[in-house]
Image (cartoon, one colour):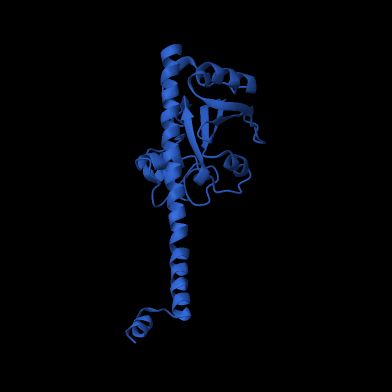
Length: 228
């Protein structure tokens, strides 16, 4: 008799089990997307910091062998593909590991060389009359899809500069001896990164060039107002 009572006390009906599973499913549906987003952000932050560190370490090793980088880039001209590859083979490739490069020039006409990196990302390098532009995609599939705007670029595409003119009234050349987040024409304020010109980091931005600087200013953490 006692055993039967215990079964009644501690047993669960099918309805109770289904209700419990339903609650678990609702909670999972609410929390899993947030967990996945947080994981994607953390992974992106980690890759971004590693890329920034790797590129500047590459540059420091190159400076040790090739001297003052002040004369490396001729910012008065647009480089051809062969000239861009020659620059990479002289100043960057000997000091970094990579998995090969290719011409990835798109319809805009600016010559671009894409390099597959060891972390699975893609480095795009170009030099024009404003200096050197560097773009980092955290994955090659995002590089291919982001060209036609099918993916939100600030999630996967991050822009840097090297020997870049300031874009200000004096148009001086910045970041000659290091690589930094893209700040061409920036007014120096956080609001200037979020609003204003075509490189502003805001919802539905097209160029989104300032997004990398916005993350750097937040200790390399994606801020809450980032257009993820």
